[in-house]
Length: 351
Ligand SMILES: Cc1cc2nc3c(=O)[nH]c(=O)nc-3n(C[C@H](O)[C@H](O)[C@H](O)COP(=O)(O)O)c2cc1C
Image 1: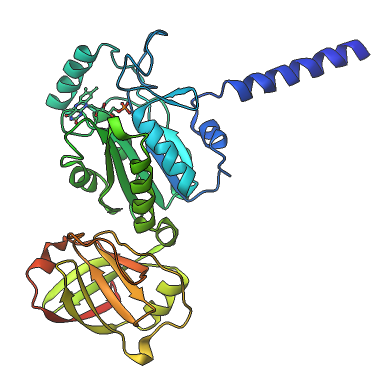
Image 2 (image 1 turned 45 degrees about the vertical axis):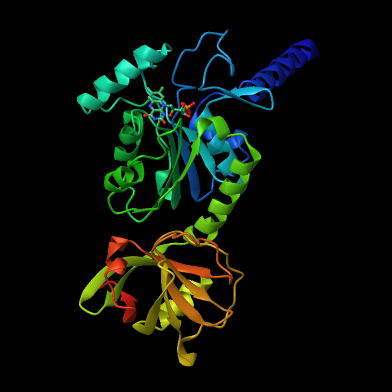
């Protein structure tokens, strides 16, 4: 009897060891492997050739542009970037996989991709994110294929209701940059707030300068503020009414208490409108802030008690004073190019 017990115990230990050594691609297990609690508000979903192709065993990081080595482990280029983002933001990793694998041969893959594009064919996916509802922020990563996002990414985005979420694209490429893909993704994620993303040339994905750029971009994105619930607001400038969101953070709540909040703002540097906040409307609970922004950010600066709307990275994307993210203008930002130098802006709840 004792012998049998020992045998069963040995089998359980062996099975556990196998599970730890060879994690499956299932989303939940990926999330565990990435150190997530399973309760994160951030999802980092990515697609790439690696994991969607039966590469032969002899294909390695030297013979394929789509494989990089991370601490001796083979990974896809976009996957590598996804894992770097996960390292810095926490969150759950999810590999987008199609039911049918793509051809390993590069030319055949190019042909297959053109066929899918021409027919606007959306390939069926193998797995689904189980609790999409729990995520407020969805990073979506992909390689540029034919100056476009792969069709599998479109299948993924179309499979969920992303209303009220913040979608943040990132991509890898070999020269064509992000092309028009952020705009396309914005169109596919109706009701979500889609930010402009981060793109990197595959050749440079592992360099120190990319790591620094990624860190600086993530700092500008300010995932922490954006993980709070986004309350729909309006931003009225004369007869123009823009849509936006205010994050339900400690700062956002203080600002929303003052709605309708009127601020006279002046243009500065081809990148922002900013203006003093009246004493009676100033928030009291301070936060640290950041020295950068993403386009559309509505911010508060505790150093000079001003609010700003940033509409263009311009050639001065780094700030000399820290600003705190309150919310974001989600309407088309080109309006700001046509405004007078000084305008009265009213922030209010969307009715
Ligand atoms: C079918 C296909 C089409 C591609 N088209 C482009 C392109 O139009 N522009 C570009 O810069 N890179 C292009 N690339 C290169 C990939 O974007 C680049 O190698 C990417 O980093 C691969 O990421 P992955 O390893 O995660 O799949 C293409 C690659 C493939 C396989």
